[in-house]
Amino acid sequence: MRLKELKLHVSTEGLKVDIMEGEENFAIIVSHGVAKMVKLPLHGETKIITHQGKVKRVKFDEGENF
Image 1 (cartoon, rainbow, N blue to C red):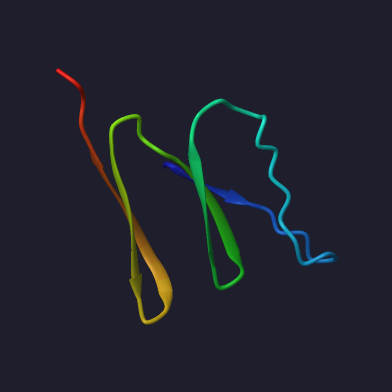
Image 2: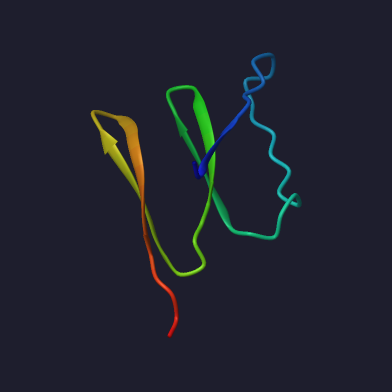
């Protein structure tokens, strides 16, 4: 699974992410108190699909240079 759930700090109501952990591009999606991180593809699109104000799915359309 590409989505990695992140732990929210209830006491501070915050999210702490180590951006130096990796050299890859990533996005953080937060919806209704749940935060998830997803690595972005080298070549392609990442679409966040919502329904009734909630994130329902994340779709990937990847390609490769010839």
